[in-house]
Image (cartoon, rainbow over all chains, first blue to last red; front, top):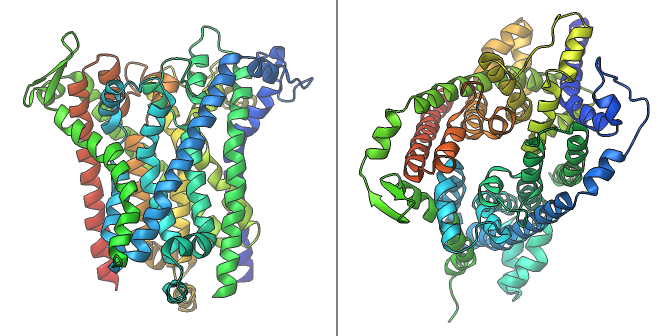
Length: 277
Length: 293
């Protein structure tokens, strides 16, 4: 029996080690390519370990004014979408889960269901709507499009975290004469913080990496986001993969950092729940 | 006089509902209406044409090509992701050390940017300088570099592999959560009764996991129906439209051919298919739960 168990452990470890390599290899190769001198990038058979490490690819991409502009655009859009999504989702989730009698669940389900529309349903109507109000090729136009994806999911995430808070805490505070706004700010928000942070990170990461709407509605440099610029770099006659990989590394960082935070939030949230239960 | 909590609750939700109406409900309804109109670019006017857009779609070879490519794409992605996801979920469930590390690693593709996945896989697959060919040739598995994206069959397979890399975590984590919910006593009781691990897996674990498997299949299928970033970046739908999934086809009808009405019609059909798949899932998942209780 014990030998059988250790065999299962070995097999499970083997599966997970292979999975880890499968998952991490593309990223490892991206980083290695980004620090190779151009002569090594085009060498065949491939030089797995670069002879020298260079940051010229990073210097080149960071010296490209279009790339910097697109990074700024991506940052503005992502921060704005995150802020607007939370500003709308948090009060709504609070109102529907804590105030409405019976929990407002049908309406919450309706809100969530609105994310089941495939993005293609919005291609043409968004284009016409944005064009008619002069928001094509603008960042506000893009923000408008992204809210259609972030709002349902963010509301659902915040609502899920709010549902776990006992109603008694709130009722006690209300009897003591606290206003709804005060209860929301001083009691509910701190407890629901992990859920709100997760929702915020979701909105940020989604907007940071979104590509299809950005391609459709921003054709000029003025409003182009970083993922769209990557696409245009690929369309060039001679694709400079070292430079592309450097750009990919830079674009991955704003996703990697929140992901690390979210891992910590989840883990602390889990231990907290365990301690209380 | 004070407003009731319920009224206040709806008041709190009003801003969200107004914005959602503008960014989701209104465009979706607008799209449904446009499916029955033709857009005249020269006069900037819309003309009601009844079912014409749908009739034109059904008469187009490219539409049927996109439908069959999408079917292959969805089936290929879902089955591959289910196999890999199940293996990873079982391993995560069994493993006693480094579980936190492995579950963090598994989530990496899921949070990766789709454009970066496309660009990096394009580089891995590169026929002259790609590391994948280099590895296969060093290992002596192939004589000649493989043109991963140049032939119709290979291109479809290569994109499915890249898409599976991106989406298997969703399946793995959904199945892992389902595995964790299975009462340990049940598995132990079965093994005390002398059932082998394989028998326990087949007769106890898999049936109890049916709802999670159904959920994983549904999520994976919906994402596959919607995903076309890889096709548009890595192959542009080629070679010979072999990777032109429905999303990319709709994109081309709308913004290459500027046939807005027909694109709207095609997107409504895709939406209908996704609705049917979801309804089937609800039908299948619910009675299963009832039967076991």
